[in-house]
Amino acid sequence: MNKKRLGLLAMAMIFGCSLLLGAMGETTSSHAAKPLTIGFVIPLTGDIPKVGESSRYAAEMLREEIMAQGGLEVGGVKVPLRFIYEDNESKPESAVMTTLKLIDRDQVLAIVGPQSSKQAVPAGQVANDNRTPMISPWSTNPDTTLNRPWVFRAAFLDPFQAPVAVDFAMKQFDAKKAAVLFALANDYSKGLAEFFRADFESKNGQGSVVAYESYGDRDQDFSAQLTKIIAARPDVIFLPNNYNEVALIVRQASDLGWQGPFMGADAWGSAELMTLCGDLCKGHYFSTHYAAAGATGATKDFIEKYEAKYGYTPDDVAALTWDATRLVLQAIQATGGLSGNLRNDRASIRDAMAAIEEFDGITGSMRFDDEGDPIKCAVVVKINDAGEFEFTESVCP
Image (tube, rainbow, N blue to C red):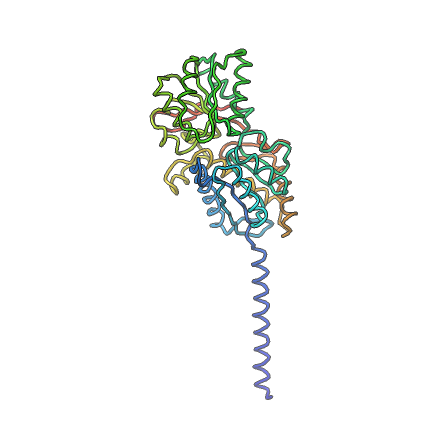
């Protein structure tokens, strides 16, 4: 072999080695940039699909913002985000199955959701048993996080929300007698009704809740319960119900002659409430997590971006999902870098979430207590003549 051929062979070998090293470098880089996978258990179908839509929209808007900057910076490296959305169909059993799927098959690092307590309570048990961090943006029932160190929430609790509603009703309507209508099969509705009755009667005397009526799953006709309630002549009717049921109840109460006030809770806060309820809901009040009308700062920026992207004002579910997802991502960043061992990484994220001392969210500042529940303020909003959820007052622990 002549010198010329030897030289060409050497160059080819050097070039081949360079290609091999480059490929190895790409493999290493690709491995380092393995997406961070977060699961979302949300009601895209069923009774409250608007809740699922708001959840997905808010999460996607956040993911797209971060990906536009090259990914989430973790330990000095920009890492892509992968969000998986699973439909819990607004059913407890579906919430359990989809949570298990995300944990076992999709091997998510953490779970955001479910939203409603009816699904979050059983799903929380699954997440805790499988040592996977979970945060429910919207669930307010204490059982979601109780004795579950792997489960957190971004919303205040019903034992706090109920007195907010009671005190406001007493002040705003001079209410000395109240009635309650709630969904018996819904952990959220049933629990909040119980907390409201206990607090109202502690402040107004035994029997001051003059009517305490419930209805079953899938019920659409509430006339029998409302007839009893109206006959008891309460000063206010408390409705701790999902927005789709609120629209039916308010309309049927009006048809039966009720002209008094309703006091609602945070499940009223869907963007679809006014579409379903219309003018009949105007002038009523409910406790919730943030007020869109008149918002300022980061909250205003979030609302404007959401409106520009999706064409309507984000409800409290969207805002809470944004905050809950950011809490998970902040915890991932606080680990300083993940190991690739799923079990260990989930534990690191859980520990980092529990250690968050202060979080400035668009639904307010908060920190977690020992149960994974946020210490944060509630707001009372009025549905004004324009159908907007207008800030009335803030109540803090």
